[in-house]
Amino acid sequence: MCGERKRTDDFQCYDPERDREAKFRFGQDTGAAARVYLAFTKWQLGEVGPTRALIEEAVAHAVETGHVPTLVHTYFFKAHGSQVRISDPRCRCREG
Image (cartoon, rainbow, N blue to C red; front, side, top):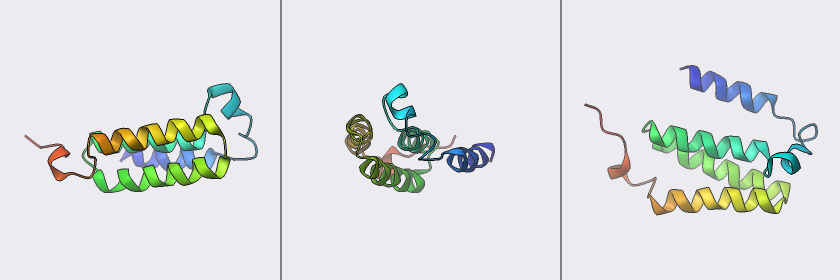
């Protein structure tokens, strides 16, 4: 799938040292933000398993950065996912 290939390319392009200043320009660390947005995209496509894993990766990455706006952004999306119950099978997309 094209999106999967893109995900790999995006995360391989991310360099924490090189992209260190980007969080001040964009408001949050781009590595954590990319994981969060990909997680919600996968959820909307019905791929619940990878969604939870990506959210946890994003949280771990945000904690590692120690950047408060990144932490707030990431925990907000984690909380939102919990509110809409990402893990609940009834929230999965239905075909047809």
